Length: 181
Ligand SMILES: [Zn+2]
Image 1 (cartoon, protein in one colour):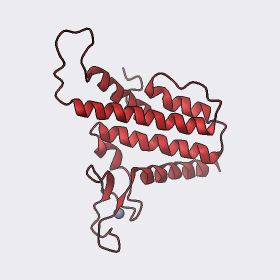
Image 2 (cartoon, helix red, strand yellow):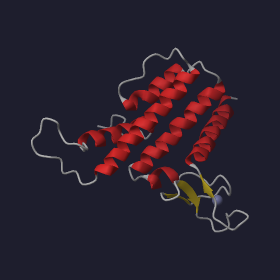
Image 3 (cartoon, helix red, strand yellow):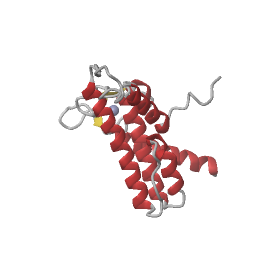
Image 4 (spheres, helix red, strand yellow):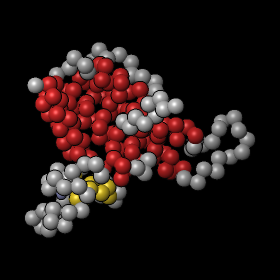
């Protein structure tokens, strides 16, 4: 029954957001007679912007790494496979950067879907290495809830999703190196 539906990655998350957007159109069906009564149109527009911006970022990074990448895929959620394919022979630094972008977008997609607990909590705080990270929407940052993890002014540590993604990718890479030796 389970044909990879439990895969949780950027592709899957972006597919869910795109599907959600298609099923909750902002303007309603163009052939329909009843006007759309979608109550949260600004939210849907923000989701569309999010999808568009995510896709554009990956396309731009891929093209700058490989000008011969050719046309980007029509489907937004196909962009990660396309990017990986066309940076497969790029420098390690480029591939690492691509992996960081993809993982950060995975976090962003999940947060947008209201799933921050699932994707943020498994990470340790980059400063104090403990668990207990929380997503703070108003700051657009991740907050460490360890009361002893504060800066010089006594403010709680906050980190960006980019930093979390960078730490994650670096850790995966060092694990691969360990298992390769
Ligand atoms: Zn901390």
